[in-house]
Length: 265
Figure 1: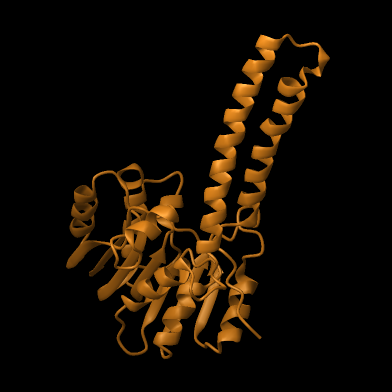
Figure 2 (figure 1 turned 120 degrees about the vertical axis):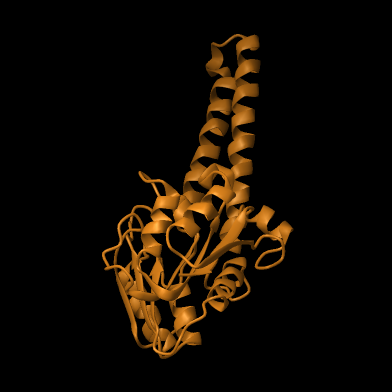
């Protein structure tokens, strides 16, 4: 039995891209090239141009998403996705019999990577698991992957990043990977501070995300707010400069701006 970690990018994204590319192509042929036999030539030329540009744009985006789909294949141990998972797991420093929370666990890849490195740790993975967004990825899949990996002491349950249903200072470590830029309806830094609330004194946090200005604003303010929340130390470490990804890999896979927020409470 092999684990099935799926893909960071759902196939539905590719299907949507193909549809969006096909629609202007068909409309361009029907109204522009053939003109339905009634449209004058100037209008047909305009339609050909407009629909051609739309076809090119959606086709290019779909091509980019297809490349990302290959890079994000978690069933391929040589994929960029696994390079990142291994990199994040390697940054998690745990005491014996530690208790770890993985926020936005998805198919359980990061949680189980940490569990393999620390077999005496208890790993709890939480996720909202929306089948409309990530079909096929749910709690049962995570449990199946844990059995396939022969990993014990792992629990998977429903949970959202905006409000973590655990008391203060519960965990020796809190981790996440490419989760917080998806947060909606709440300031992303506030969501991170909600995670840090659950870290024990002396515990660690390893949060990896696309920490661009568009998602987080000024990084100095982000770090300042984290340090003011009561943690002892924190730093931001870029991972798209060769640490986890080469600049070319980050650009190609649309992960430019990847960064670790790491520290100790």
